Image 1 (cartoon, rainbow, N blue to C red):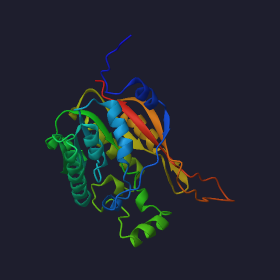
Image 2 (cartoon, rainbow, N blue to C red; image 1 turned 120 degrees about the horizontal axis):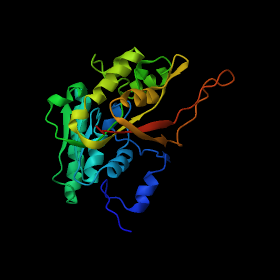
Image 3 (cartoon, helix red, strand yellow; image 1 turned 135 degrees about the vertical axis):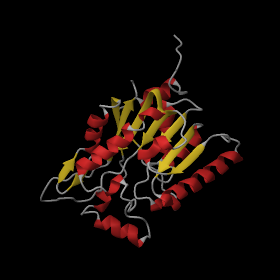
Image 4 (tube, rainbow, N blue to C red; image 1 turned 90 degrees about the horizontal axis):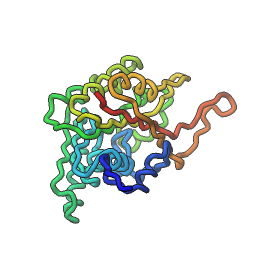
Length: 273
């Protein structure tokens, strides 16, 4: 029996594959310019989510767009997109990345009339910007202040030697600089809750995040976001993104249990009131 697919443009096989609650995705190598960002997530991953949760021509928002991955994925998917980025340096890189992607698509006459706008601003003030009604929102927040934490010295040294950024910014409005976990969580959830007026009714919101370890204990960031933001939107489900090509480190070997964490939670919320 034929049915009308009101959600996306996928065939049945692709739809079913996406419904798995876990998946392995190993990102391709990052381009030189976007390497400056300490925690870029892959366009190839975002594109799969955009193509499941929207139809071609829809409008996508990433309120913490970094160096523009979501906008590139939206362009490749035939969707309009807007991205907000607090750090002016990353916003400029995102604009350059978007311009490069548009030029590449124009050569093949694909998606040449799509909007892909980078806004250098604060996601907490999103309602002040000229953003139309949003069909889908996808983002990944800072994982608290983990880039400032003890135990990350090796990564900091490696990135410093390569002249790459080791923190997102020194902006006091950057939630990645907040040392108190509860204050960080409250502000982060407040930002996402404040985006609700921009979203059309029954639009989905995907947040890609993981729990964090600090000071010898785990802070369940993904679960806390699910609990607190679930008071504003309906928490519908989760998908677990796993990477199986990462190098293992001997954390706590011979002394204590410390896992190598190579999975993220992709939390699916929906605006239902």
